[in-house]
Length: 430
Ligand SMILES: *Cc1c(COP(=O)(O)O)cnc(C)c1O
Image (cartoon, rainbow, N blue to C red; front, top):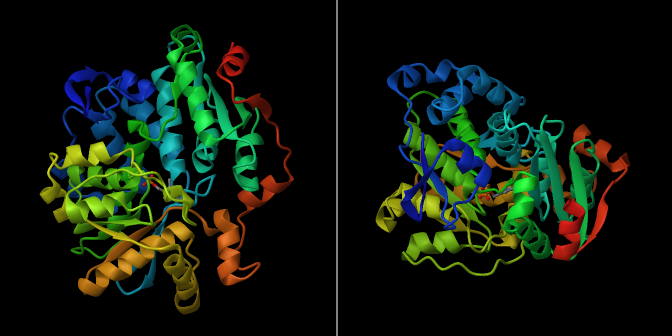
């Protein structure tokens, strides 16, 4: 299968280049040249398949021409080593828990699949692949965990000193082995600038076999479509779900659109955002106006220029009318989000994290005007990752901290101090 840039359909590359390059040189996004479909042999039996079997069928539809079935099966099985249960909160009101992975957020699915696919694509290169990633928090942890001890790979994570939470820092700095953390004396933008400078240095990039674990990598989106299919079949037969997606860069929502292209019947998509409401405003007005991001308590969604928007446009043939038919957008304030966390705990005895709470509010709004519909809200992270907000609303000790997060507190941080200076960074790399 070939992949083209959303900016230029004539710029086509093979799978290895699309995944290792991550981003086309024209700054578009890679899309499959022919969008895959799952056939009747899949849809006649999909409700009886396991999560892993669904994952394998989807992965094969995308990558089956390029990756042999046995290798693909191993990649999928290595990715899906934890559950993604649908929990019913009230009639018609469901939550899809995507936080049972090693770093307690849905990004584990994409990062784990990408790590394994990259390792397979470079298996005969005879040299190590070096993955560079700049992180403001969550992405780095998911990528570090996903690549940890993956043979033939080495990961260098750049994070801004003093600007990630204590537990997030532990997720980046305590793995060791093939994972190295650089504590940059600067901002997240500085970290991104350093990473970019290494890629622009042709000789260095070539010599170290550099790649990026960017969130717009196609290898991160495809595995996210697995759980749309997996969760839809947990509703009674004949009921088409309304998926409610707490969104920032809109990768998760794009993966849902991928699932419908594969053939999954979905009644509607609801994009739920915090104050960063570029997409809801586009859906209402037809005008797309990216702006600087605004800080909120659902900070993984603080995005002013969603990086996957070009893919969403491409999937709707650049038609605003077509997109607003299928996607509805709602936006909520931090105050409303805090109130939702309290309400859901008090009335339904369930702890929603701030991102899931934005989604839950959108689901209530949708069902209020569409009675009888069934919403599935993606719960994108475990509430224990946002203890400060949770304890402010629900009281101290209100959220149980999972073992795999709790044990990090006692691990020793290992990070290399790095000035926010391109020459120093490149010298260190060399
Ligand atoms: C990354 C993230 C999001 C936003 O997902 P997008 O795919 O960027 O829209 C939402 N919630 C959490 C917890 C996240 O980590």
